[in-house]
Length: 278
Image (cartoon, rainbow, N blue to C red; front, side, top):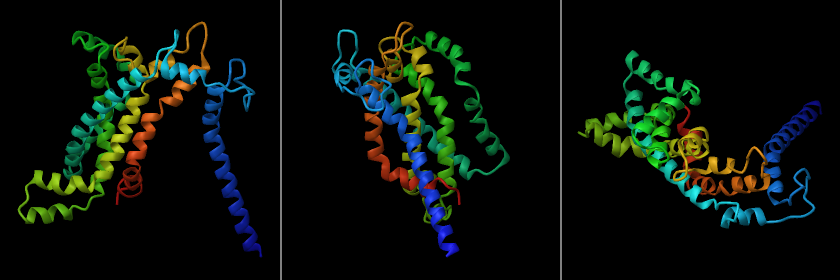
């Protein structure tokens, strides 16, 4: 009887913990939705007495004092897609080489990739702005992508090396015995086996670029403004338009929802199988 009561107490504790974590996680999101639907002056209510969709209408279609969100969403998707593709193209072969080349030099090279990540991003903004100004790339998609790509290559190398380390090397040895070259073995055997890892890495890189604010706010002016600076523009020294800001934030999640729905199968397999080293 004591064992049964102890087991029930454990189940109750687990469920209470789950409920608490879910409430703590979802309450800000619930508050975001409620505030974006509430009329002016009712942002502190748990449930608004009056609901309006005028803020979503202003963000989606624009208004005399509000710019439509779609141009900035398009800018974000373009920059993030280009950055993600280039990061994957560079980090995948690099991480594979570091995974198969075991030596002190390769370990030192691997660790050197993280020096850039150890520095606060704001510490590098001045030399990067000067460099982009000299190249006439301020307020361009290419200029912003050139900032994101070197910043995210260490993340791509770190994630993909974990997947390659968990791939049995016997697959490659069999291919070499059959006469396959290094390139053919990599593209025909190793890379298809690690498709989940590529998907996981791509999603992580895309998310970082999509939500990054500091570089996007300082490098863009009018032509290449992305979503984070656009959302932040609803706050000024004189007022903060909460409802418009939160409505824009909710709408900005659409590309991420589409991306996750498309890559969910690969992400789940990659996290549960390939990301843990054997």
